[in-house]
Amino acid sequence: MTDRFTGKVALVTGGGSGIGRATAVAFAREGATVVVAGRTSDRLVETVELIEKDGGEASWATVDIAVEAEVEALVRTVVERHGGLDIAVNNAGYLPEPAGLAELAEDVFERTLQINLLGTWRSMKHEIRHMRAHGGGVIVNVGSVVGAHLTIPGAGAYGASKAAIAALGRSAAREYAADGIRVNTLSPSSMDTPMSLLENETPEERVERAKGMFPLGRIGSLEEGAAAVLYLASPESGFALGHDLVIDGGITA
Image (cartoon, rainbow, N blue to C red; front, side, top):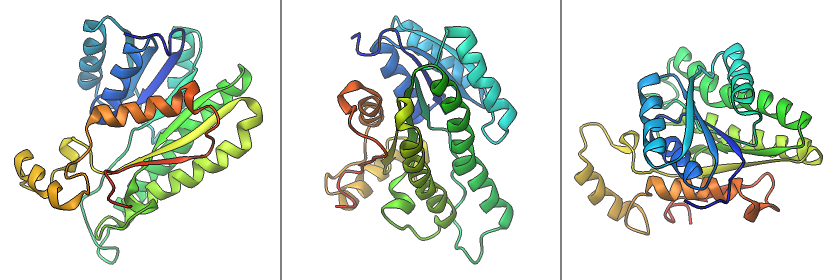
């Protein structure tokens, strides 16, 4: 364990799996007190247990970021439980089944925007309100290379929602810099999660597919995703504001 984030309180939404879980574990290893939030309590408990087994400090809370009252309550709970909120990682998201825009059901498009875009906005809204009143903080929103940096047929709704997250982050960065709040975006490509598997694809088949898809010949690890988040949250990136950090193995180079 290191002490880069000792004394800091970090909130990670979507902390029950994937980059969210890896990020929560990484923050705790570097001294932060971590709150993981999401809709599935069993997964959140698993993340907390991993952190505590490693000697870190963490707790969990359920939240549906599509419901503003729950998001507001989450931020209030974090502050009441741990005395503040220094870092927020807005990672929770939704990936719909692939569909062309002409075939896409309106309720699916609305749900994608409701969770990915509006959910990120709701989270920032209440995080910023606390941070602004208490000397500042850092927010990292997790977007995607899809939409903002490349196009994938069948992922129009997802891409639109994720591209908008980067734009939203830039606006917030300009609006609240004077309040001591830094806002940046992380845009990863496929990472080592079940979500990156194609239908009926095995992890071994994904390895072979990645060799011809990524210049580096592989997908990203969860630890690499977490390291990028921690960089954006750390003093080392103190002059980065409104930035969209792409980690994609060179696929958009």
